[in-house]
Image (cartoon, rainbow, N blue to C red):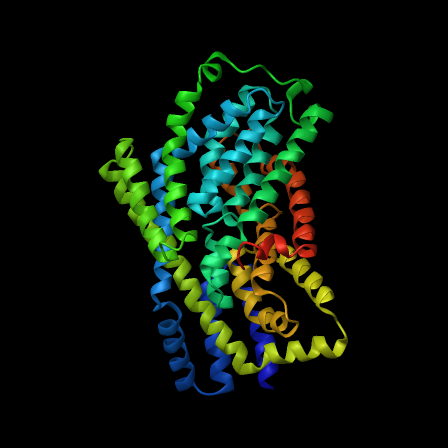
Length: 440
């Protein structure tokens, strides 16, 4: 069998292994090792694994992963998410669908300091869903808006997926963060427009009996002063991290360290951090960081194996000879990514697809920062689509209400998926939305 045939067979075997339940990192390493063994020799395959693992994560830049994860964990235990929701609830109390809008707004702000969609889904399921249901929102809409808007966590910087893309594509992580700002805000505005449209023109879709209940006494007791006090910690953290990063004061890694220290200080000042919670935060940060870095090391081995087989060059040549233009290639790629999102997680999709398609994108002269934004949005759609839908299952486990089924949550997220598909089209047609800030 030719080297190219071995490469294609390796991808097929790996996808089958993942679908059957093998960990993505293990599947990448095993199939890559066996492929190199057949192409060269056992000795070279063993050296291949060692060199890939060493080269993949030894860079100082990779310190950004555990630091931003640590910051997000401290923010989660400090209760800042609840306060952010309370502030937006007070600001939008006079609008129909105000609690839905508050959830989207709070998710957008929370995304600016966590970078993990699952964290947003978990926090706001416990905070926003009971509040919305208490005020007459349907259960399906309540869980749908939380799961739908949680995807903002992977687009609005700092974003874990942006970091992974930047590493694989060898693009500046700072520029990737900048590229996510306008698309993230556009997507949040799209969600807000969807909620307002339902609230004013189709209220039965989001309110029980088609009527929104008036705010209770507790919500009306909030004042500008108390709202400002609640919002000050998260605003300080956002300005500290993103202001320092985009102002050129910090590198991404330094910004992560400053953000983690700031979030730690907030948790201490709010007296939300016991010794046990601190231990849990550190352990959870270790689990998440090691998992991500292990995947990056596995992806490095996978990329080198594909390069050894000649697959990226062969695919680029094949697409060129077929006469497919850049738009046809881009459409096919995005459709495949969205389809893969139905069966495997977002990080796995990027690790599998990017080493194959990035050489093609470069050959077509595509802006890789713009390509990265499109990739992240398409991948994030997979967080909301059945049967995998990580955000949906996160909401289900956090809500712990037998009356709300997985089917209800998937149905509730459908309008948000449609908005994301429309946004994906918008970002593809107008690349400046993604590249303007990044290229300044």
